[in-house]
Image (cartoon, rainbow, N blue to C red; front, side, top):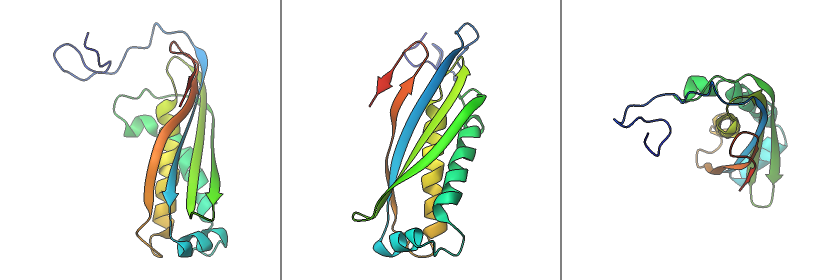
Length: 157
């Protein structure tokens, strides 16, 4: 077996077999940031975006993203999530919004990709809803913050 778990010795891609793994509670939290202009920040905070309440829509989109991860990432297993949550931290001074997504399941494989997808989709939704004001927004620093459960145990960034 190669050192990459999703490729065999001949370089063929495959989904990892998790049938022999134990069912455990698994959690993952990921986050990322979108930097926006002062005009965008004021419009988001003042709820003056024509498409609606940006953070509420982005929150729902992020949760939906967690549930669709296996449809987007080819080698991800479909997971029955028991919880998905998206929250935001707003730094008005630096005009930055951080999306934080936590995904939880009881299963045989982790939820890191679900948390990363949820945070990313939330940020992309903010971009989509605000691009009519300014297209120079920058999404950055999307990363896994913490994960628990499974064979590899607890991880903190």
